[in-house]
Every structure is written in structure tokens, then in C-alpha cells.
Length: 264
Image 1 (tube, one colour):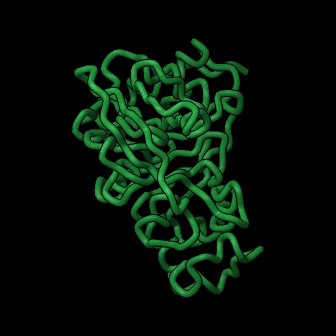
Image 2: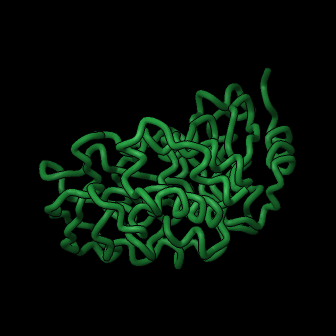
């Protein structure tokens, strides 16, 4: 079936979203299915529905940025995390952060101030940066057709908690093209773990903890099975689970439910 824009807005309302929310959306256009207006129609829905709030999409560039490609130009650098993110970053009124590997694009309430200063970060999800600020902003995270392996916010939780063995020992040197055309030198450590080359793949081990404690719930957007999360709640549950064994997401095959039963 084809979903109309009104259908999609109705699904957002059914999920409990008010339109005034601060919300970060990770998405798979393929999972959403056939939509009136295609990918542009999906963006129309999100930008219209959250016009009184703050809409955030990741526009990461970690896949291509590195020693061989050290210059980050926010106006021209393609996002490596999907079609919708690339279309969104080019839309009028959207502001993209100056983080060389984990930029975020924002639209709506105080968008410019929310993404300001990311050129001063020195890790992918620096404490106090765009991802960490979601919890102070009472933000939501909507995973559309993807799971927690795409939930970049959990990286920020690990950084705040100073979980060991998550970052490279040495930084990479980048150059960020500033709004006035000048270039700012930035030193950025990268995600790295010797046991797990894709750290976020282990974030799915926390899925049931989030459901059981009520900080995440299953919703639908188009044809996509989706997850709506409360950022502050995800932070608190993750902190509780990791407290006795900070590296358990990588070192343990399963996280037992006993680890979060006190929070239910």
C-alpha cells in the first residue's frame, strides 16, 4: 500500500509525539515503504509535523573522513547514513553541525544554537555535544526501520560514563571549513575497540532493558517497525546496566535481565 502524508502524521500522533518535541530520527527509507511523494514526502511530513519543535537527523561522514580525506565541508560533504539524511541537509532552513565525523542536521526551534560549537569536539559524541544534549532537552529518539545498532545516542552515553576501550589512543587531524570560508584544525579521536570493529552492533543487547523499563516502545512509521525512545531514560538505564561492568556490551554475549530488574 501507499501511505499518504496524512497517514504518516497520524502514526506520529498515535506514537504520542506532540509536534513540539525535540527528536532525533535514524531511518531506513526502504523499510518505510511506498509513500506519497517518496523520500521527499517523508521529509515533508517530519518537517511539517515537528515545525514547532526541533527535528534532528544524523548526517555522519565517518565512513569517508580520515587521513586520506581530512577536509570537512558541511555544505558539500555527503552523509554516509542514508538517502533521507542527504536530502534533509540540503533543505532550506536546515542547519548542519561542524563535527567532521558525526555531524547532525537540525530544523526548527533554535536549530542553529543547538548544533553550534561542534567543531570544538574531539571525540565522536563528546559530552555536552549534540548527542549528549538530547537528555537535557527532554529529547526523543525515533528509530525508523532500524534498531539500536543505529542509535548513536548510546555512544554518547558511553562517552559520558568514560567506558574504556571505545576510542583510538591517537587523534586524526581534520580541517573544518567554517562559515566564513576559513579552515579550522581539529583533532578527533575515532571509535575503536580491538574486540569489536563495529561497537554499535552490540547496543542491541540493551533492547529488552529499554522495553522492560518503559524508556522505549514499539511504534510504526509507514511500513517500518520502529522504536521510540526517551533519551534521558535511555541514559539512566544504560548507566545502571553498565555500572558494575562498563565493558559488558562488548565482552558479554548476553546481558541478563537481573541487571535492570531494580528499575522496573
